[in-house]
Structure formats: C-alpha cells, structure tokens
Length: 402
Length: 77
Ligand SMILES: Cc1cc2nc3c(=O)[nH]c(=O)nc-3n(C[C@H](O)[C@H](O)[C@H](O)COP(=O)(O)OP(=O)(O)OC[C@H]3O[C@@H](n4cnc5c(N)ncnc54)[C@H](O)[C@@H]3O)c2cc1C
Image 1 (cartoon, rainbow over the protein chains, first blue to last red):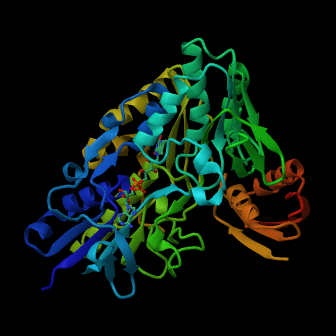
Image 2 (image 1 turned 90 degrees about the vertical axis):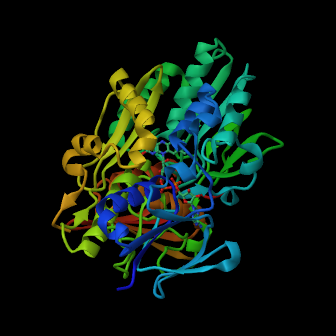
Image 3 (image 1 turned 180 degrees about the vertical axis):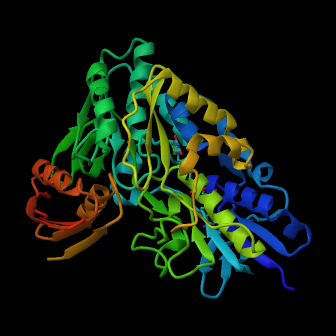
C-alpha cells in the first residue's frame, strides 16, 4: 500500500495546530508508515504576532516573542525549509522556491497567512511604522514613542483587509496610555482614522469604545479612505481629496495573501483562497483546504479562527483516512481581544449565526488575554484543547450537519 | 464606466461594508457598485456610508432575505 501524503503549506498558527492535531489523531498510521505529514515553510523563527502591540507600545523586547520553528513542529512531521512557489491542486503537486523541487500529495492544507501590502498606498511605506510586519519593525514604534513630546500621532486603518480587526483601536488606546503614564499626553494629539462609518465597525463594540475615545481625548476621523501619503509634507490624502497632517504615523496597512496564490483558479482576484466557510475545503477540491488568514471566509483574520479551522480540517482529514469518527464544521467563531488601556480589555466575539456581542472592558478580560499569551505556544501543540473546548463550548466546532 | 458586482451574501457585519469599501478603492467616478447581501444591516450601513462619503445611493431592493444596494461612485477627487 502506498503512503498517504499530507502536505501543510505554512508553519504559523494554523499550520502548527493542524499538524499537531493530525499527529495526535493519526499516530498509529504514522508509526506504521501508512501516513506521512510534511510542512513547507522557509521561516526559521516563528513570532507571537499579538505581542507586536506590546513591543510597539510597551517596549517589550522583540526576542521575547520569538521561537525557533524547529522546536514548534510536532515530532513525526517532516519539515521542508522552503516556501511554496506554486500549487497545482489538480495534479497534486507543490513546487518549492528553493531549487524548484517537486513534491506530490494526497491532501494539502494551505495556511500561509497574510502580510502588509504597501504597494496599494503610495508613500505609506516611507512614512509609516507598523506593528504587523514583524517584532523588530514593531520595536521602531517604541523607539519613536520614547521621543514624542508634542505633535500629532495618527493611527488607524489605511486599507482593507488586515489581520486582527481590533488592533488599530488598541494602538490608539495603548499610545494614549503610554503618553499619560509618562506625563507627555498634554501636548500630543492622537487621531484615529478609519474607512468605516464608526470607530469600530460592529455597532455593539462601537457603543463600548466610542465613549472611551471621548474620555481619553482621542480624536477620530471616520469614512476616511486613505489614498496616498506625502512623507515630505507629512500629509495623508483621502480618496475624496481631504487631507490630514501628521507628525508620527502608525497606520495599519492593507494586507495581501502569499504571492503564489494570485492568479490561480482557486483564489479570488486578489489571491484570497476560495473555500467552503464550514468545512474549509477549497472550492471543487475535497482533498485541498485553506485555513487562517489566507482564505476568503467572512470572518476576521485572527489566530482563534486559524486554530478552530485547523482543528476542523485535521479532524476531517484524519476521519477520512482512518474511516472512523464524524465530520466537523467550523462555526465562524471569532474572539479577538481589544485592549482599552490601563489593564482593561473587551472581546469581539461572534459566530456565523450570532452577531458580535457587547462586552464591557474589564480587568477580568485583560487577565484572560494575558493567560492566552502564556499558553500560546503550548496551545499550538494541542496541549490546551480541553480549555478551548470548555471555553468555546458549542462554538468549538459543530458536528454532523453542514 | 465599470459595474462592480459584489456578492456579500452570507457575510455578517462587518462583511458587506468591508466588501463595499474594498470595491470603492478600485472604482472611479461614474462607476456603479452593486452590493448583494443577506445581512439586513447592509441597507442602513450603506445609506450612512453614502451620506458620509457623498457618493450616490441609486437604490435599494429587498427580496425576502436578500438585499441589493446600488451605488454610483461620485465622491472621488
Ligand atoms: C498586532 C496583531 C495583533 C493580533 N492579535 C490577535 C488576537 O488578539 N487574537 C487573535 O486571535 N489573533 C490575533 N492576531 C492575528 C493572528 O496572529 C493571525 O491571525 C494568525 O497568526 C493567523 O494564522 P495563519 O496560520 O493563518 O498565518 P501565520 O501565523 O501568519 O502563518 C503563516 C505562515 O505561512 C508561511 N508562508 C507564507 N508564504 C509561504 C509560502 N509561499 N510557502 C510556505 N510558507 C509560507 C509564513 O512564513 C508563516 O510562517 C494578531 C495579529 C497581529 C499582527
């Protein structure tokens, strides 16, 4: 009997939990060499991305967020230290960037995330410091913040989509907190810009944070569609021709999927992979899946989604191979924390069927966020599934129906 | 003139308005954006968005659980 080959493209949050769960569910088959799992990613160090905000606005050392990728990949999984250059689903083949090597597969899971796309907004790259590219770039915000004594900081959403919907709002609250704690807030304006009609697009969360913006004296410009930035004049121009001056720019850039996905028949015109929103299979291919930030499902791009989608996909592949167990479906559950400063946080929580809830900021929520930070790496090994199951209850996955 | 047909059916808040803003970035003055959604919030949200950005709301249609909003792009510089 030939070996069943499972290929995982990307070893980030989604790729790691999927392979951990596959190893757990198919341990016998792997031991008997009936199944092999291979993960493709050239990255040698993984980073805890939610921590970029801590690096940018609290001065956490970038090294604290980094882990060698080789320590994270579960035992029993083969690693190819090369990025995927092309994926031919019909012919079951991956070609890697390094040496154009060919690998075939029976199942494939794409989990290649997304990254800032500065090409969409002229001038933004030269003018901006972001907390999305990596931990080291994020630390440049903190070095700048330490020198700010007066002027205007502009934070907010420069383009869509981007990962972690609350993160631009968190930047506003955390910059405010830093400057207040250092008694430098008086001469500094903080302005939040967004293309949406509200400070936070979902009304229940907007109701919670809008009063906080007034309380903290954070200005906001809604329906501001950033068109371009002039770094020499220190000026942002909107699609409608409005302008806004800044002294310091910490905007959220629009994001893009991995290059090899663009122009394929399984992605949309920007390269986001088209999947079934419940079982995550790539349209027309029942042995190919895309999870996490890289797919086009109508939820936020966040680690919790990548995790719960990975659990579903791993289970369904394992069930298919072993012939036992039931099929699982993703519920659309989202849960992004939003720090509102001074040890308080709220959560953006919803599913495909339940709209976002109104949750008041509290120290308890902030503590929950901190606990998540502590267990993050172990959770990618599947060590905390009991806690996830307990916490998410019927949203963890649904069973039996599509 | 280009017509952008945006299918946001099955996406809930903030889905449809996110899709509208993404299409708007690509469009030019005179272009039409037709946004289809199942989220009832799409109609008030798109109305508010047109009012605030000064783009033209051409019409809205409701067909059971489906909504269609037609917008003419007029506010770009
Ligand atoms: C500031 C910030 C705050 C955040 N806060 C939260 C939060 O509070 N809650 C939450 O749930 N989420 C949060 N997130 C989002 C979360 O980190 C991501 O959604 C999550 O990492 C997505 O997982 P992924 O597997 O899809 O992508 P990633 O974890 O980004 O992994 C993608 C992997 O694919 C690899 N790759 C890319 N291209 C290729 C290729 N061609 N071939 C092979 N490999 C490739 C990359 O090297 C990378 O290792 C935050 C993110 C940021 C930036």
